[in-house]
Image (cartoon, rainbow, N blue to C red; front, side, top):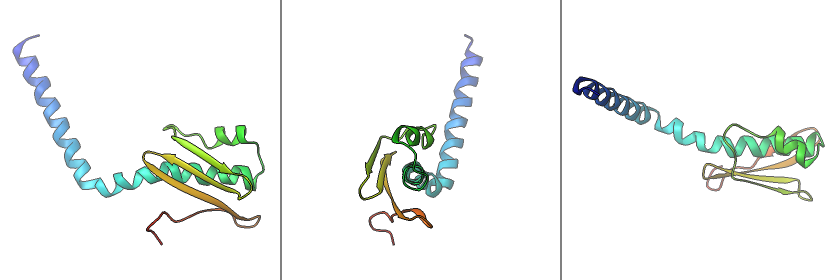
Length: 111
């Protein structure tokens, strides 16, 4: 590989790193909020599937599956409560009633 090609690749790599860092700095609040989306969506959708629609555990596992896999899912069947973990966050959804369905519980420290 010639010296000019190596310099060009290095310059492109540096520009990508600089651009990515600038984008992250401008959007860090939104990026950090994304971590909670995975666990919250999984908990809410799984809870609705199981306790509102009444489907089986196996079906609801596939129903709530996402492109980025969650790291854990715990179902409390008698309490009609689901806790999902993903990207370092944990979210809990609980069945409220047949009319209202499931609701996400506020995270510790939020209310």
